Length: 307
Ligand SMILES: Nc1ncnc2c1ncn2[C@@H]1O[C@H](COP(=O)(O)OP(=O)(O)OP(=O)(O)O)[C@@H](O)[C@H]1O
Ligand SMILES: [Mg+2]
Image 1 (spheres, rainbow, N blue to C red):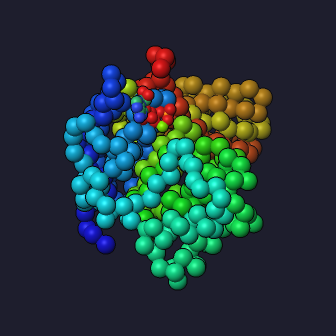
Image 2 (spheres, rainbow, N blue to C red):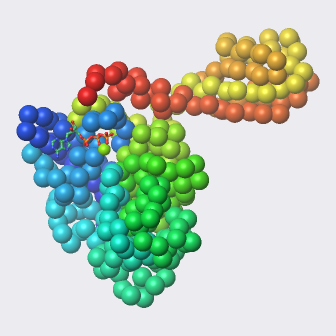
């Protein structure tokens, strides 16, 4: 175990393809243990950024260290896991064989493989199919096995390029559980996703990328969440009770049993519930809705410029 503070420390990484700048300037530090999300429209440069950090694409300019080593350092690869965007593998292998192969490549011992391989296959929900060749797998099943191979060797740093693509709701929840497990063991994760709701519940911090440039980073739970909207369901809300809510919010609207309003912070929601109950209402459902990441995304990188 090394003690470097940043899992990723990238300085002005740039990638030009002939006639096209894919990544203009990637300057980014990701502390160890963080779950970091890349958000941006198609073609923004997210996958290219990941590939540069992995040493798979050579930057045109700039420099970076990954787990304390310069880009392309071969020894460090064993400590890195990667789920590519368009995951393809030898489809004559069974699920078990594929995951074993990746574990072996990362230097795991036979004893480690014996317990860990079935465990990760179980974790991604494919135990029943572990002895089937990948050629018969559906898109979502392949995606799951791709995730299993990315984490089988308990890497210190995991890159996941669209981990939930093709997955059903159960699969998406599984990805969330895997991310939580990765966080719990102290791994750093960098992921791309277009599913903003997934990013919202899993990431500590996000970067918004547009036209090869990071236009903003946000700590989730930070400033963008200001302005909480709440949907409350309550029976017997009197006119007086409604009038009293004005102490906390000017935007309350009641339709039938559904009461909607916006407040500065979630902290006052409990006060409002107390007030309503005190005024004789039965509050039976309270759902705080944060200003959604989608709103922020559309505002920062949203307008469609065509590809
Ligand atoms: N090998 C390549 N040769 C030429 N251009 C490339 C190459 N790889 C990527 N690009 C270009 O670089 C830009 C960024 O591509 P990249 O795959 O990084 O985008 P992305 O943000 O991952 O998009 P998506 O959300 O669609 O996966 C695009 O304009 C793409 O056409
Ligand atoms: Mg991509």
